[in-house]
Image 1 (cartoon, rainbow, N blue to C red):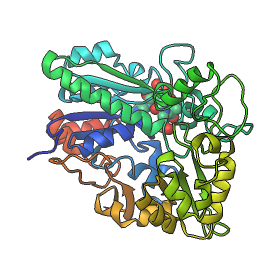
Image 2: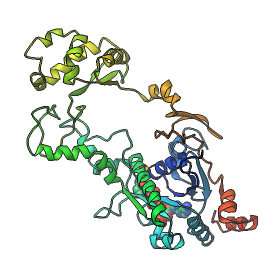
Image 3: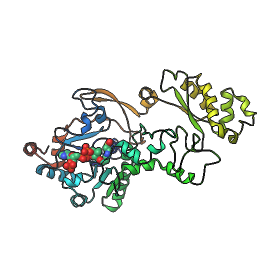
Image 4: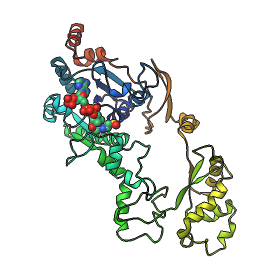
Amino acid sequence: MGKALEGIRILDMTHVQSGPTATQILAWFGADCIKIERPSTGDATRGQLRDLEDVDSLYFTMLNHNKRSITLNPKTKTGNKIFAKLIEECDVMVENFAPGAIDRMGFPWEKIQEINPRMIYASVKGFGPGPYEDCKVYENVAQCTGGAASTTGEIGRVPLVTGAQIGDSGTGIHLVAGILAALLHRERSGRGQRVECAMQDSVLNLCRVKLRDQQRIVHGPLTEYPQYPNGTFGEAVPRSGNASGGGQPGWIVKCKGWEDDPDSYIYVITQAAAFPAFAKAIGRRDWLEDPEWNTPAARLPKLDQVFAEIEKWTMTKTKFEVMDILNPLNVPCGPILSMKELAEEPSLRATGTIVEVDHPTRGKYLTVGNPIKLSDSPSEVVASPLLGEHTEEILKDIVGFDDKEIEKARTDKAI
Ligand code: CAO
């Protein structure tokens, strides 16, 4: 059986992270993804954060698996014609250049539709229509303008951005959902449509629960469980520290070896149902008889003391020992795993979530494989293309050029 998106051709005008995240997922699902790159330089990330001289960076390789690369400058006369032919032959065009860049190349949406009415045209921009629509945006700008930074960190301290690339990769994943919906819709309507994702909107969507909290706090603090138990705050949702923000009290506590290992911590949740077993495990059976501690209402005002007591116990065990003891007691918990630990985790290797890839000039490296698993259409991770590796192949097979026309395109600096 073929891959889920076999037969779908993507015109990939993406660069940096957000757009490439989207097209990489489509390529993992089996789409033929043709990445258009500027002749001689290509996607800027090929040369960014390089660890090996003259070798495509991990930044580039880890975002562009399973794609083909063609160098093309649509701003040249010949390049413009080649680009128009590619629009005709592809199903989906994806881009994440600055606002207006594709229009300035001579391809506004109306013209794309005229060339190929079935084309689905998907874009990532920093902001949707409004005062900031013309702004260029990178990851952390999106995190700050989408509500993530104002709610991350400690109360009274500077706002923090998170390591998860919710602005770039998060928006790319939203874009994939839009593209797939538009493909399905095209099956019925016969027509393509525009798919637009603003990074601010995608981050805000991922911060949905914080907008929930914003509306709840105007009615006063929650009585059954203070969602933000670690301080007093003003009229906006505060930074939540390590509180879960949901209905269960949770916190990060130290484990054995924390003095030397910055990741020797575990997240533990003290939900009421598991509390008796938890109290016994940590040697505080006395809590169960004591009205000062034996009800959620009694414990809630002094959660800091509950977690301090728990920490005395977790500090005598490694984070994995704590996990092994608490899991059978139905206490939800999770060790803080470093990138080194994740890279070495056998179960993630077994599921293909962490994959070793062989690259022609880099050699072997690790990447994150497709986290979305399809039962009949498993993803294989193929090394990212070298710059222009497939230029001739694409010009011949899709554009219909012969050797002479390819040579002319080269002389014209179109490729
Ligand atoms: N041949 C010739 N020119 C090309 C080309 C090609 N194959 N591909 C792109 N270009 C040109 C564009 O046409 C554009 O030219 P003009 O400005 O003259 O129209 C130019 O390259 C630069 O594009 P850019 O403005 O998008 O690039 P930048 O590095 O200045 O900005 C970024 C980068 C990411 C801030 C901007 O593209 C952006 O805001 N994108 C939308 C939001 C987004 O995706 N951000 C996430 C990035 S991932 O962290």
